[in-house]
Length: 340
Image (tube, rainbow, N blue to C red; front, side, top):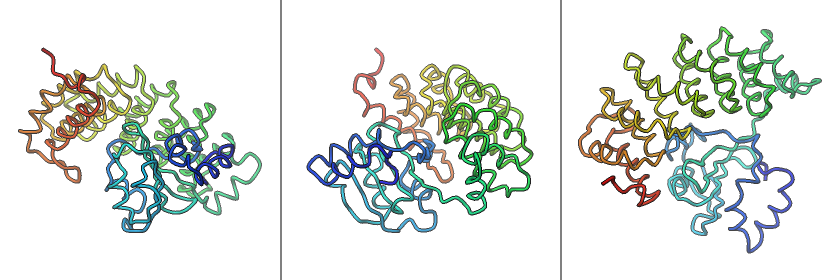
């Protein structure tokens, strides 16, 4: 119940104890308190990667499941097994890792997967936030820019600014993008993505092209993928097509185009399936699967047979192409039909 909005909790308790349990779980997404949602980037929406996010040191810990599918519901089992059973099942489900503190949510639609986390604030940050205006945009902005406060706590304030979903958080987050510490800049970029304010796209595009730290640039790409819109898609497409760019950055741009449902980028992603860099081919295939592009099927099917290149920790380009093909066929036979 810790992740359910206050106004839904009483009803949730009643429904979960009665015959309408499965139906309530199926509709549970609307009752989740968005302040506790931690998005999972599409490239990490696999059972093993999610297990690493939830319990990096103990993937075999016991957890408890809650699912609209009776065969998955009310089970106590190790986390890794629960994730393999639930991720991609198509059934709305929760996996409770730490009661009231940490859970995983699997939605009905493709890619509707996120972590639910209640963060215990460090004592020092808690004292500051409990002061006058501490949890306001202005209060968090002061924490983020106070050099007397430990950097990890300042990054926590920047993280929280994005999760307030308050448009006023845009300015302090943009200011944090200019900080000399790459950790703060990266956290600010990610929070701007969570904020989803299209007015920040030009600044994120600037960070993408000028920041000296590659991890900050990748955070800017993640943010642009979350924000979407015409300008963000153009920025991501330009990076994908730039063969002089770092392959890891181009691959991240391809992933972002899938994240923001950039249907008009499909021709560029199909062209990228022929790229010299395996990493770019891998994530372009992934994005085309997310976009359910029937037009990409002929090239994806050829890649699934012919491409022997492999990406460390992710697998082969052929496997990505096969998964993309399966996603397109699963979505709709009509979409998967080849053009005559």
